[in-house]
Amino acid sequence: MLADEEPKYLRRQKPLEIRRRKFGGRAWKTYLRVTMWAAVGLAGAWVVFECGQFLLSSPAMALIHPDQVGISGAHYTKRASVLEIFALDRGKSILRVPLDQRRSELESIPWVESAVVRRVLPNKIAVSLVERSPVAFLREGSNMALVDSHGVILDRPLEGNFDFPVVTGIGPDMPLGDRAQRMQLYSGFMQQIESISPDAANSISEVDLSDLEDVRATVTGLSGTVVVATDGGNGAAAQESAPVLVHFGNDDFAAKYQNLVQNIAQWRDKAGSIQSVDLRFSGEAVVNPDQALAGAAQRSARGSVRGTKHWR
Image (cartoon, rainbow, N blue to C red; front, top):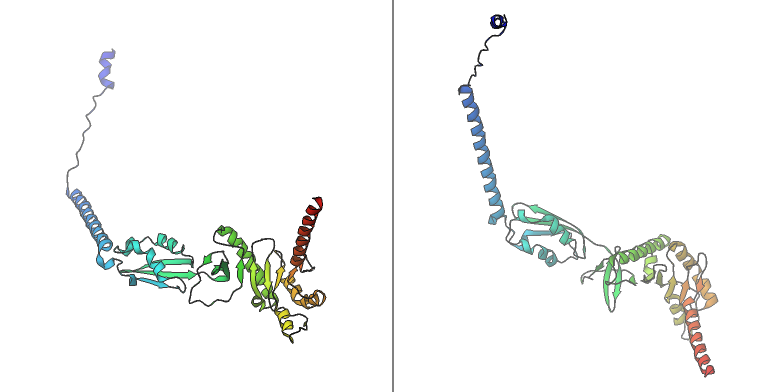
């Protein structure tokens, strides 16, 4: 009975017909469009490549003559020092010049604080310099150099005309960070005393920065009591203009300088000749402390000798 009913429920499945897409007109247009764009892309890449090769190798783009390097802002920086940095780029296209590297090398020149390097088509390099500003002379043995507020030591140019105090206590063998710290102390000292008197800087002839806890400045031109001399008055002028070594400590320079200027005459009336003044103690002044220490050292040395002789 199942065999008789089976054909009623099971039907033969019709095979699935697979239609193949014919290569018609639309397909031809698509392939043609893709081929055209590929050809245009290849042609553009070839043009760009050829242009790049021309720009990188053409003599018209090459850096050949020193006159092709334009320099602005150089007053004390030697032109030869700048051109030497671009010596490796001679004969090459200006597009091959590594601008950042050349800028860094220019800023390694002591007089150069910052630099900007630009390409000027077709074959020039423009260099703009900002030079350092010296703030003091630096005594190095018998030679005089210049130093800026960051402690960078600068060669003294022959054509320069500078009027600065002399600083000591720093040198090229000292790390740059230590020099910068001392020069910042010096700059603060000069700014504060100039706030008391605009001409105060003219009275400072030398500043010793060897001790960060004590700025020692040699001050000249301090007025004082006229001292009658045997040669008819020259001694009085010498007394008034005699240099005085002043211990300013490391802070409150303005108040200490004002105390010095206001009371130097009174101190001279009491002490006579003044070689040094110690102002490190707030509101107080010790006159001729260095002379007293030297005398004490001499007395101590003599006492040691006498004691030795007595022991024998």
